[in-house]
Image (cartoon, helix red, strand yellow):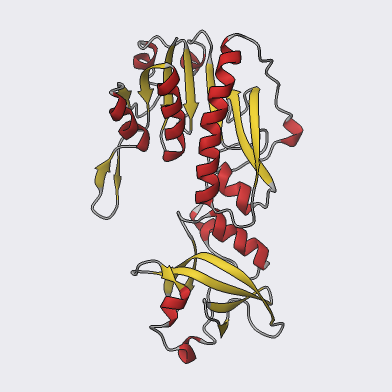
Length: 309
């Protein structure tokens, strides 16, 4: 059994680890190295770094549709993908004996796309999960092989849900493969009428709108925590917000976004006429800190009445 793994981000690392532990991974395909940070340091993907620990050959095609021959030379019996980041050409999809299967971080057909974990929180889903599926020609439209689900807790963030689903993906894949390889699992088609999408988050979608309900704002903040971070602006400077709690105040005559009160753990802002208390933040140019620590260094009298926009 010759397996090729295709993946890129941290989410895919446990899946690769599980495959290496139990099967013969003859090659890994990941995205090209990218320049990161202010110094634009050329940085390998998490999967490339993990592959180096196992001395597995790594391919990094810029465009897999034009550079697929090297993948075929590995003669895979099965290709497993997870958050690879490119659409595979038919030459790859049709080559392996056991085809290509994918580990996707949602309960398909819900949340097809590149940011299903973000959207599961932001869009208010009560549960999500992982799906092992056949790779199709479209975006996450292949037949479902197996699934496992988890409840989205009220305090789940992108980070906590990401990490939980990543481990679930590894466990489900390892549980699925033995019966899958023996042909004991009957795949099922996705119900098109139930399809929803979790497209990549756009820059403009990261901005907080305090005209929305505090529940919606809370979900946006948790769904973008820790990266890229939901933001607003205060006195002309961008401020990212990472954690909030609900207050009991009601401000029908005050403009949404106005800072109105202070507490032991943070400060209140009007959110759709209700009270939202900011607990964790990062002002542009400064390190992330607890709101209570930020308040120790500012004049609260000057902060009261400031409008976050």
